[in-house]
Length: 448
Image 1 (tube, rainbow, N blue to C red):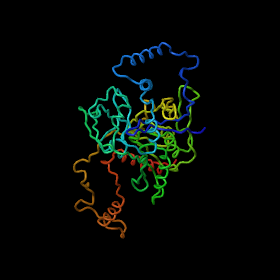
Image 2 (cartoon, one colour):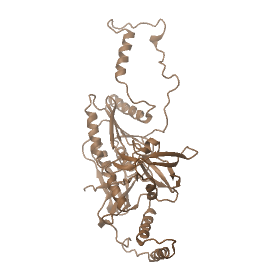
Image 3 (cartoon, one colour):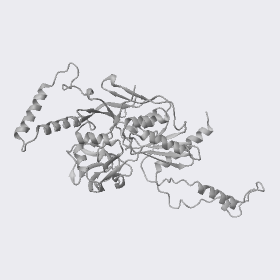
Image 4 (cartoon, rainbow, N blue to C red):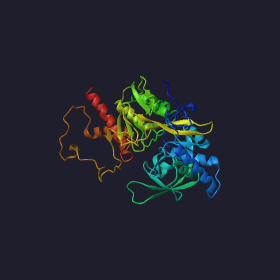
């Protein structure tokens, strides 16, 4: 079975993380919109017609028929779930542009919760991240205008603007007693999907910020570069923290790169025949080297697909915090050449049959969010035997290096291998690196 094209909403400002399967216009249900044998809701349609007529005759201002009907369609879809929506010509065009990796705005992925705009994740190296927005923040005011009562599209329209212009957001954040006010400057957002570096000889790091159309290919190329280093690659950290999702096929491709077969993810809708399975090929880009996946509350949708697949197939150790829980499939249904529906049609399930929706992925090793601070005086070297007065000299081989010279040689060797990663910079990443080392030690001591 061929895998259908997947799209994600990429608005000029922000994007709702919604991997979607594009289908032809023929997939649109007929105007009755009812299952076979179900009658049209005539009483409700009469009510709709009555309300429409009252607005046309009594509303304080004249409203065009097309505007009223479009608002009715938007309200109908908004009442289903936070991710279904009607896309006008501009929004439909923005969606198709969103997978290219460049758009304008603040650089945050958002959804709706309790009438407020909820931050799913800030995108790396964007005004939102630099201003300190976090996954889980609730935006309650935009330029002093209350968000309560707005649709998500209304809020997005307010946050859009010319690059270089400023916008003020008022946030509610867990653990903070008072609202936070942040001023951000809009910019052209260029999302670099994949970044990589060597943590220390033999251990690599790959960061995926967002799943775009070429993410899987870019990640594989980055890993091949890491493998070409002088020290063979003995383990990899795959960082999906604050990755809000993106293109479904890229999530499948990233998972496939580390697996040698089996199910990656499947989707299931109301119709049992709608199930789609995505399976892995035979090649593992790491050739069996240990893998740690870092996730947190900002890891959503496509990120959860990857984490869930690698966890269920026991290919990786998942570390961090519970993920966001965005596990529904949005199908892009063209209405005509310019407009479309983004309609929730199915849920994602991990290979073991776990639903991601509203549950997320639980890490194998929980790492609480926190800040690492060395104890006062911790930098003082501990007392050793060689420091004691009248300590016994080494009575080993006569050609042995004196204690003082040996210490200098060891110091030089250690200085050449200083790890740029410090716990105070990224405690979770350092712990992931330690786990990779532990797995390799276990493999050497217990090869079976």
